[in-house]
Image 1 (cartoon, rainbow, N blue to C red):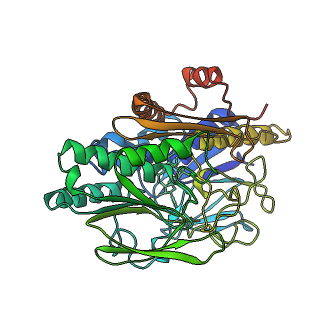
Image 2 (image 1 turned 180 degrees about the horizontal axis):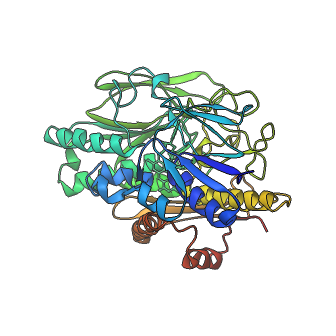
Image 3 (image 1 turned 90 degrees about the horizontal axis):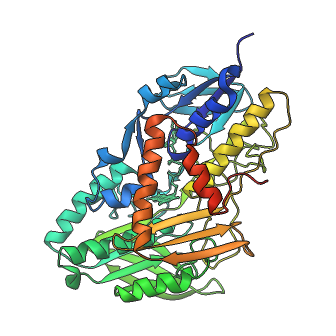
Length: 426
Ligand code: FAD
């Protein structure tokens, strides 16, 4: 009998380091294969910088095959078509199939632009920063916009869960427009499904409400909260403001010359709609060990994992899944797979702490929510120039890790332990 086969689906922020960490944990007890849709890794958190040309796309990308080869991890960039969870098999886009013993889903989000007429970069009227290719097109659109400036609308639509990048992008645009000395020609509005500024899908962290309100006020950015975007025309966004009772309180027709709205996320087609595996939005159901209860050989990590909202809100708002939380899921899965292969019970639990740095170019806001759902043991937020530098540090550290195929360098462990933040529940 051959070795057990562990297949990791997706080579984004979570999947790439999951492959490295799982291989380091199971060593020669199993073969590890990663299925990606591309040979290129892109560091998504730097996309807002690409969209204003503070970064060239190539600076945040890594060519993966040589790194995987060096780490003795099999790799294909053919992409997956459909998972057969009951048959323990995955069909690839070229029609071939791969059998597995253990399967790790790290497919990130499917971007639900189609849920709102006129939204998004594929035939719609708003740009996107969710993928690096989108951010590259957004940079071209922003350059054209600066030739003939007008109003800007930035934010996150109903059902979105990733609010940090929306604030980050609004404030980065403000910084860049000031640098180009045309900020005075650009009225800006922040439109969000959050019930209040700084909610972030987490019912606020520390003082994020005051911090972010103050940042928006200081920079003359107006806002609309509890917003439901009904339609986007080529130069007007139609928005309903929803009251506590669910009724429409007010409508806004917001003209724009440039707009970026984060969409709602859902599970990707390859794994969506599998009874027992996914919730109605196509996110993967997992237990505390990141394991699916119906198909216990399947684990999941990152944005594709189902996490319930922190509480009811007038407009649906999801929970963000940030980098450190994703790394904590990776560490738990690697430990659990190693335990299973050694015949032990898989008991490692990820902490799901939310740690986030939102950079504005000349400053930023950082927060740590531990655990995610209040009341919390750590509920801290802060702002200042140091956040910009910390975010550059995060980018450099993460890209180094992906380029080298490192699972966890010593200094990372040390720094996080010093901060009292751990990836696994002890
Ligand atoms: P992804 O990184 O999206 O990776 C999923 C991968 O799976 C993709 O490469 C995709 O192509 C692949 N895939 C999907 N379907 C298939 C298939 N059928 N076959 C093969 N491959 C497939 N978090 C932070 O902590 N800090 C930040 O500053 C931050 N900034 C963000 C900025 C933006 C604009 C966004 C959108 C998110 C940000 N996040 C940030 C949140 C989060 O860290 C990122 O979204 C992160 O990339 C999520 O990692 P992931 O592995 O779950 O998904």
